[in-house]
Image (tube, rainbow, N blue to C red; front, top):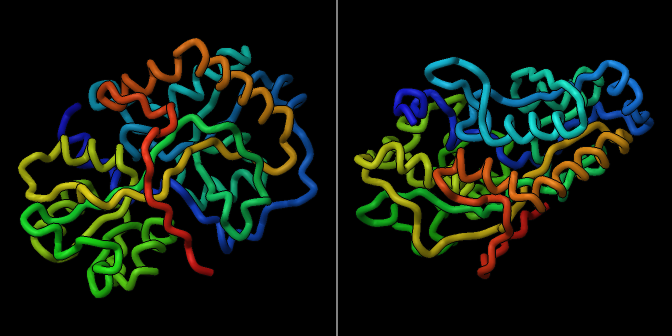
Length: 283
């Protein structure tokens, strides 16, 4: 993968799991629109377009691609439908779901969030856990989670990652669409001390920038998670259709193949088989 492309991807600050607190526009009287989708012959999907390797533009062709993009294309193909992608940020996805401008969002809303019951969810297509990037020479002075007290945590606002950092007393350094190298160099130079995010995403970022003296903390892994697609509440038939397609893709190995293509040979579609610490969010 071209390094200049990776530099443009706001990987480490991108929202993997949204808590969805504060989003109050979702209708609780949503109707199932499967008949309309079939009549139109198109699924309307939202994706970020800026989150490597899940959703990004190929450096040579500028075409939209990525792990979640190609999964949705395969799902649509199996449902004998076309798919139209709209690129937008997290807030735009939520608003567009609620206003029925899109049918499915490549967005995993925390099921523990305040308004999580306002959305439909597909079965998972990715399993992961959280990790922490720190300075290579001294782990940024962090040996256990309690050592985050007084440290500066870098990340995007409203993410579970930053909520965990704040819960342990870290000062939050909010970044907006920063590039991977900026995040990593700021930790290396001491402007910030840590980045909490998805393990696989952080692994790929470090692979792209091996000369920056940071690494993933070898002792602190927590909160196993899964990623699914989100739909408007009540859109039950489309949810069931997508689930059936995903299950078939699990069984025939297609999901694993797509994962290995975009995650450098890693299969992120299977659950972890080792114990990982769980951190409960307060409040």
